[in-house]
Figure 1 (cartoon, rainbow, N blue to C red):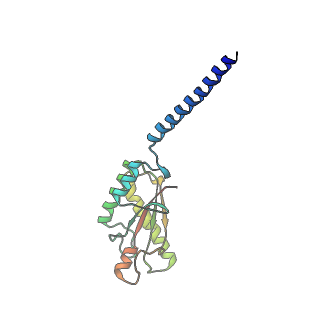
Figure 2 (cartoon, rainbow, N blue to C red):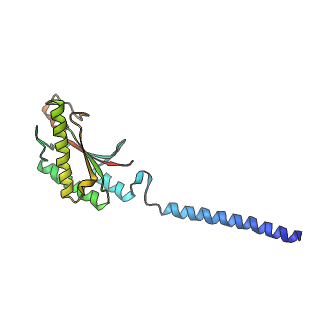
Figure 3 (cartoon, rainbow, N blue to C red):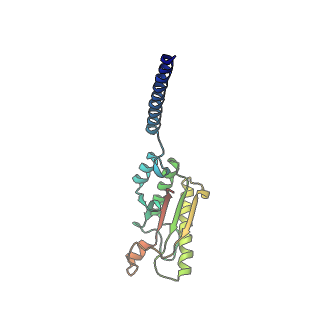
Length: 174
């Protein structure tokens, strides 16, 4: 009888060890198949964002449209070269399944705060319309008019003011 108890006990230890090894192998295989990294973006999505020029920030992945002149003073019509850039970005986002974005519109420092906040909201809406033309759903695009906050250039020069008349497209990772 004691011999039988030892055999069962030994088999129990072996069974527990075997179960532990199987579990470790299973978790290892699951980790190897993981497609969604930290922050919910796939490797393909991150690669596409980087290729388009998005930079990782505290807000998520941001594409700042300030290198080209997007808007004339006091206007919210997206100029042609910038429109092509936004179309390309929108198509890329749709292709990799990124369907939710925030679009921040900005102004230079000329004009009142109220005027600039309204104008910046119109600019964000104008870029959102171009993203819709690229195939994005309007319901997935949040627009924010930020006015003259957070300038990227010196507002005391015409060139600086032109850079501040911009839009940022943000993919949230939260």
